[in-house]
Image (cartoon, rainbow, N blue to C red):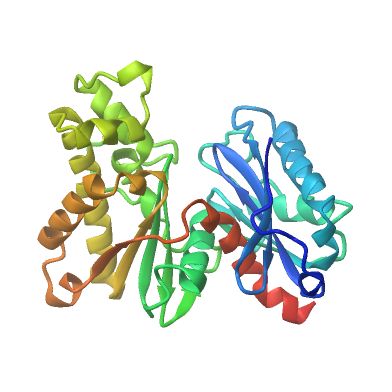
Length: 327
């Protein structure tokens, strides 16, 4: 378990303010946090995701995170719970079917969280993890200056969310902006989602590492992660550079398509792969200039996300913010 108190809790005024509890459920970790109404993460806990385990093991991990959150003194100030989960999600039904968690198909996560003893009687709001990141970056991060933005999470997979006319756009089921699963290579690899040639299969950290290894890249010390590929690229390794260029080209195609379809001001890029910095952003901007050919699309800015690893929890809290007023 990882345990962290992000902000010292010694001010009695903090205890008087309404807080939001947040869950960030992904393929590698399940995190829980307490967030204040200004978007500051006050406390968080984290467990590894038993992604290959049973539905019960997954549910038990979520319950354990909630148990540990609820033991914190600030829990008494919680007025709503937000969940950002890997998807697809169905916000109407309150269910999730994460592509990378096989045991969860139409899993009733909202009802399961609402049934937790510490959560009963609190409103529970569900959204996709990329939508949550988008909410966070629009509330407190890099998307704040823009009324129309695409926010991407490029990590184990590729997720995205949309801000349109200054408001988070989730779509009827909560999956609007699911950019990682648009097909950009008709003859491409089969994707776990059931389609072929998905953007995620070319641009995710998993895809970057796989492509580099398949083309002769030698992982230093056996580290086969996208971060290790980025380190090699920074040293000028041509295979590593091509792997990132390929990923950047796929992302540029997706951003350009979005810009052409709905007109956006900016694309905010976060997630673990974005930590590669110029190794990713330089070819991304170059390829976007080629793909976003129409004048209104060519104006799109590409900017790095600001909130880093806090984005998932701050974003899940952002999804639940409206429920504080209604509670």
